[in-house]
Image (cartoon, rainbow, N blue to C red; front, side, top):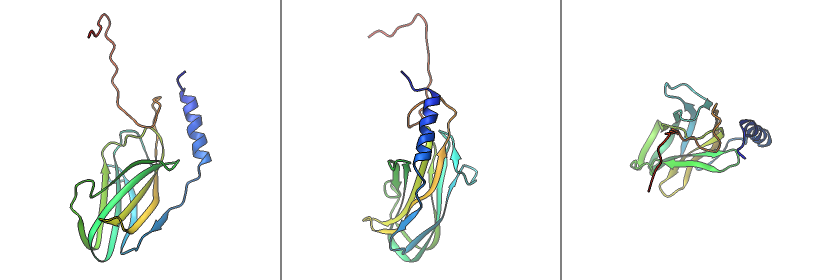
Length: 171
């Protein structure tokens, strides 16, 4: 009745083989340019694989050709089927709208990556407050979450099990 680790591995292998990695696409006015997008661990090493519960920083350099008064940076994580797993931006994170000119760096830090396993694609964007695209890098990075757990599903949830003999919960 429950899927076995072997069947789960076969499904993941099939998905990995059946879905080809799509190339990065970009769009926008390019009044600001995003570049050098990197996925980093806690000690600032570039990574492509991590385990459930690991931390992940998505870093990018930017260059604004002229002053931008309404800048919002955002990220999105998609699975191999194109499903949005997570998305946020500086506005949703209650940061003030940015005014920038020249060069800088943006970093989004995820303390605990909740995915149980699979490949995930990172999109990073620089937009206006109203959503106009300055620079949008779709699927610019990919990372894989690898788990040695036999747990099933999409997300990792730490669980503690406790069995107590001769004790029942009464309502």
